[in-house]
Amino acid sequence: MRLRHAQGSRLKAQGKGRSLQPSAFSLERSARWLVGCVVNLIAPMSAWAGGGSAGVRVWLPEAITTTAPAIDRLFYTILGITGIVFVAVEATLLYFLVRYRERPGRGAYYFHGNNLVEVIWTVIPAIILIFLTFHSQQVWSQVRGSPPPAGLQVEITAEQFAWNIRYPGTDGVLNTADDLTTINQLHLPVHQTVLIHLKSKDVIHSFFVPQFRMKLDAVPGITGRLWLSATKTGDFEIVCAELCGLGHYRMRGFLTIESPEAFRDWLAQALKE
Ligand SMILES: [Cu+2]
Image (cartoon, rainbow, N blue to C red; front, side):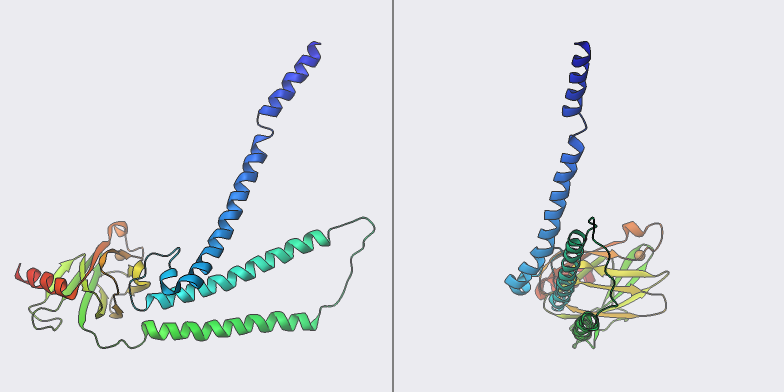
């Protein structure tokens, strides 16, 4: 009687204790992870397919330049292709694992490859890669090729740990006596082509505004060029994307994109001060 009681309480303890919970918990977590993966994989593609350039943004921050949507489309195209290949490969792997698992009385079958299958899985990826090469080259030349005539030129010089920003003064020409210099404050007019000359005083920094989808290293001794035309007004952040020293984390700049009138007023006011 005492023995049976002891067994009963041990079983009870196992039942409500830890023996069942971890597997139920991990099953739930696995299911959630799987659903999350599928949603994350499908959402960008459906958003892109359904919403044109407005639907492109799912994971990425807002795109605010004329060239950013083309970069996003390329990103999602590659993500879509690799996503489909990933799902197809994993599904095939699982199917073969189950279908041809070891069974009593079934021996291994040896054969020496299949030329047709090998040609198919070589030619299809080759076609996809050639398409992606030409498509990304097109986007690259649009983004990094020769810029359209700039309405405004700005010089940004990075240093440990700040962005020195130089605007042309009333003469409209950079590097003259009447230039205006600010620290970490970049104001740009919307719908206007801006050419940025990027320099560094000390080490390698990297000018990055995620909403521009552009990043350019600031290398000592070299002047980098970056052009853009903003499509939206608002406040954004400039980040240094290169580990440039102990104070790297605080190398933040503030970007304000405003109407051409507001920009002109701000520049006039700043020049007066
Ligand atoms: Cu830096």
